[in-house]
Image 1 (cartoon, helix red, strand yellow):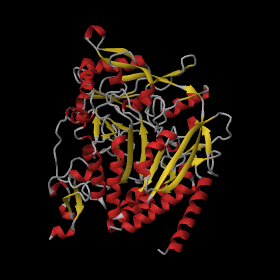
Image 2 (cartoon, helix red, strand yellow):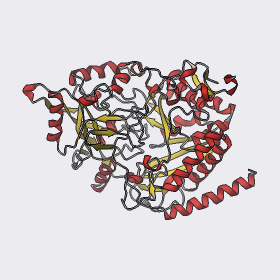
Image 3 (cartoon, helix red, strand yellow):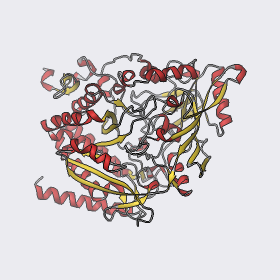
Image 4 (tube, helix red, strand yellow):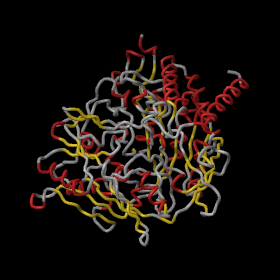
Length: 586
């Protein structure tokens, strides 16, 4: 497409999207329950409707306690009868943290905290809030704001429960104060753990900052017991001012430290194929600053089902035709749209009119408006809702020591510069989202100031189908986790990202000791935790590298029948990736 024609296309497309922006629905088809039950038992899924290994998670039954006492009773029953026990709320994790496992599925019970979600108590003199484990992040934020206070750490996705968020290390972005990870703002929590018969088979222990198990309990992956209450620090209510600066990406790997230190809630989004880095200038401002803005991130808002399915169909067609240029057109359109509407920032709750956007803390980062729905509206939904066959993607999240991040970016740029259009598949989604996490005392937290990189990319409808430029994403993934020793986000990633994770945490054995102390009979263990925490070796099946279940070492781990063979990386030569090589089929 000629330059002027392309610009006209983008302008017209952006104009239509802007019109939709002014008319968009505030409600959508509600997400379905993560558990579907019948007379034989229940099947548990995540919000994407598909686990990393594409295998169902089945349990014989699920229980819904509404009080801490009822929750304790469930743990006692499981302990008395030696049942595996896992806890779920909305099932927002990508790996199978919440699945009891397949080794003995009939000997398990699932506990949902979705109805244990009523209590939020703000303690004004002590600047704290205590909440039930099943309370959603959005409900908690709103209750705290109503009382005249703010929760400082702000994860970007608001769909998780309070207990789920702290247990998996969910975070926003900040190197300031206590940092952007929610668990670093925990003052105390209650854990329901197995106990002796004389103690009733279960007991509640209160763990505060002086307790020897505190640093194990605040990021526990649900393997120590059931979190029942959480006490968090809060501050006086404040506002934030946000401006997105769309810039050339030439030097951003040398500027990220200064950016994070200058702006309390800074982040950077890098669109590598577009040579664009978007700097988020995000700081507190006085309450009397004019503005009642919101951040309704476009990836988490309700979209027309027709739009989501059309985008998915377009990407599938480009994949089948090996049409990189088609993906680049989508990427350019996506970036143009995001720039036009400030990626979802709104000055007046309805539309973006210009920078800066000023609003209350509770509305300026955490979002997820597609969750709040009217059952009568079936025209729009979360774009990844599995019922509509919309977007389906992988999400890789790597956490780097700040000292290693610039070299990682330089390597990715070398890979990008070989053929920039190969990166368009990332930029259709959100490019590379770069955030900042402060050093933490949590055993499974970050031991030094760190940089988090998230990127999403196309996932096929069935496991044996390779992806266009699959080798690029695999090389970046292996570069991050193996060359630079990045740590995986516990609630995201394909399984290979967790390889060797036990050696990446200096206090890992202290966490295992806490688990052995609180759960000696392994009620809260599962197939996933046995593999990830204890290094149980998974079977390397044919095609396992296509789904990130292994790193290929033989061609059969890819799909040689469709022209994908196990090859070295292009920049990180030690990588082993599934690369399209039709000449090798001869």
